[in-house]
Image 1: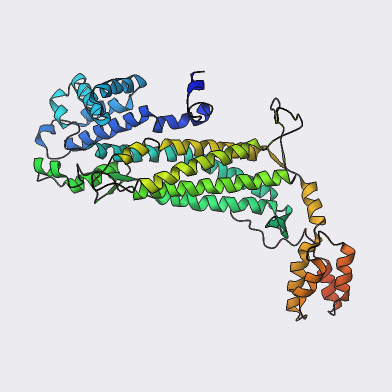
Image 2: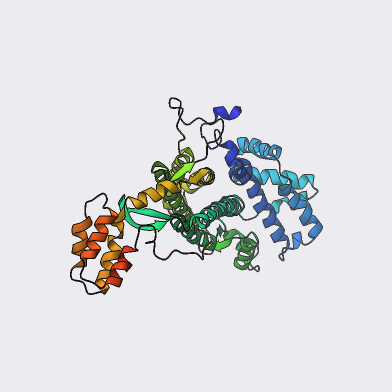
Length: 450
């Protein structure tokens, strides 16, 4: 129960939910990704024309990759102990790797560990890489699961007519499934955009010009080397930079995630409202308590939890997207400070998405209540009747229907039929108008996006 002493709920109350992100955004993970970048960089150097590294081959590369592939919590602790002396996190990684090179028999090559690099050549590749992996392996699959859950509910309820409510007032009917399908399409668009945004990698030395690289080995195409190296990591190199990446692509990723959180909140609030209208019921989970005082209650806690955590994610993503692209001159340290929190909004998004899925899996459809509301709101067919009357060149049909229906909670079928009978139109048109009901006035329902 050590997590009872954690300050943040994402590592305390919600640790079981957020644990999958620890492999990408914990301090241990950050150190491991930094070591991955340093090792892969050294291997890439060994494949250039640098004569001192020509002796290294594929077997050596395999041994060196074991440094990060077999990286453990004890190794991370060892790096942190070095950092207590250096008071510099990247230098601690370098010293740790120099020791590991000695242990593996590569001590003569240790001066090429972190060769000609600045800290941000490592951070600005390690962090985007961890973000890419965390999103692709944890967050996006979960959002796909949310999308699938919504699609299944939409398919099941696509033909269930439902009273729409614009401005909270009864409006032209829709179907329950179609309203859920709205969120499927919105998620699809944002997920497509998220997959299209490149993950940036900065790699160019202390001020982005390969100064140290070029002065040491002027005959090597360092620009081409950096492009290939970052591509090998699965990143797109920002080509003209200061000491740090300009973070515009990373900000775009944050903005896209922010929109996904906004869609989640919109979905949460709609589901919450449908529950309050008794359109949705909730499955009772044995042992759960809805209220400490009112035993009867089954509260929509999953949607409320999702809404709150999505809001927290938005707040942090907003700061990241607004702050990261701004740095004084060639760099200041503010980017490094906030980047350490990159996993926090993703953890809140993870919690929000899981809670929303859990809530969706609990809801049931109260068809009787939905039908009752349709039957009690016959006024919503006024739009249909006045529109048909327009096609018949009937004078001022909108005003006629307005006089009959505006401000009235309901009108009876008899009243509506009497109104239709009073119209000076052909008898077959009256029959046509009388067949329109809130249950069949639902328009064209999409069926091809499940």
